[in-house]
Amino acid sequence: MEYIATLLTQIAIYVVAVAALDLLLGYAGIASLGHAAFIGIGAYTAAIFATTLHLGFILSLVASIAVTSLIALAVGIPTLRLSGDYFVLATFGLGSVTSAVLQNWVDVTNGPFGIYGIPVLDVLGVRLISPGRFLIVAAAVMAIVLVVKQLLVRSPFGVVLRAVGADELVAAVSGKNVTLLRVTVFIIAGAGAAVAGVLQAYDLRFIDPTLFTIQLTVFVWAALYVGGCGSWLGNIVGPLLLFGMPEALRFVGLAGTTVAEIRDILYGALLIAVTIYRPQGIAGTYRVR
Amino acid sequence: MGRGAALELDHVSRNFGGIVAVDDVSLNVVPESITSLVGPNGAGKTTLFNLISGLLPMSSGAIRFDGRDVGGLAAHQIARLGIGRTFQDPRVFSEMTVLEHVLFGFRLKGEAPLRAVLRDPRMRAEWRTAKEKSLALLGEIGLGAKAEEKAQDLSFGEQRFLSIARTLASDPQLILLDEPTVGLDRDAIKELSRIIRDMVRRRGKTVLLVEHNLDVVLSLSDQIHLLVGGRLALSGKPDEIRQHPTMIEAYMGMKYAALRREH
Image (cartoon, rainbow over all chains, first blue to last red; front, side, top):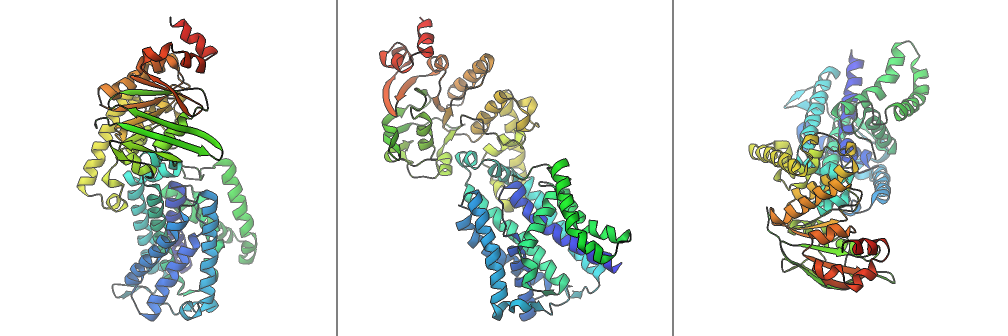
């Protein structure tokens, strides 16, 4: 049971990361390869605040969202003026720079050794030490994030967001401040990524720079794509499948090591199958542009 | 609905490298009137639209709207001052519904993400009113029955009407229409002409029209300007323009024949 709770917790954390990317990529059409960077910045900020200042979970979470949002603002203002391909390159650069900083700014990040001893998650003074209890918190956070996302997209803001994603020129001549909107959604997605990072830090209680590389970005992109853009259900289905599929093989009796070896083949097959048979994603409504 | 406002072009030019696309054009658009820009392909009509709506910077000259210098403003700032436009292609948002296109046009306070999340009663009331107004507008444009359909499922003509409804929703005082009849059949052109006349008579808008269909231009316009090679070649009322040698010269060939048939 503990194992399943741990697995479901990881899925919930990835749902948060995928939902944040969906706002950016699925709705606003902004292709960012810097998603792992924001998850990492969120995780590290919370881990540092929790281990050095001994802030509780809620305060670390708030601090982490604030710091990540500011960094998203600082990165977003210059880069979101770039057109499509150049923006993708810039965010790829952001990912690389973030990895380098996490590796080398030893005084703050402890470099390649990472940050360990992240305290057990406590909510209002209650220590939630068992995986089952952590799952409750992770699932609650996930639900809040999905609800906030739905409120955002099913509103005038969401309509304008999709319009900007579809045709910036039309949005501009209709009086919409396209750059402001793009920066705004970039910050919101950064904050969402930070939430996923904070949960990850508290779940693993040990983080190091290798967790937040471009591979994580690719995984979140894949989960969003498989589940489908523009759908809260898709945001859940994607991580559920990507995590659940290898696990299911273990339950039918394959050895753990075999599953690990064929996992990438599975992911590849899944991506190809979705691309051919359901390009909008399993539960998706919009196509990734 | 807002009242029309005057647009003034003052020695406006635009070069692309060595090519002069718009060459020293000065003209006035009178409030609550329909003014048309005509001329052969490449005459600089669409470039002029892009200069007015702020998608391209001018090389020299000045553009004033309602007495205010709008040169150098960003496209969205110019739009907020009351200049709306359509494009030659409908440029609809293919995955969005017809209703959402019109809702998009309105400028709502609920566009702020925080208000979207908090859903305070005022924001909800605003959203509801906007939906009602959108449906009414769609009804006037003839798309009322298709409000919930995705734009990509509409015919080309319907997409054109939708793009006009989207522009009207943002309530501009001056509307720039870039070849609105292209690709429309006879009935649709008739309906479009009615809508354009309505913009001025019922809504008090000012219309600036780029159009190749001379029948439409001659029947709708209060004032016509002929652009040739980026320069203003001729200006006048439809009756003055119709038979003018410069006009006939610019529209030689099929257009020439069409003009003759009228008389």
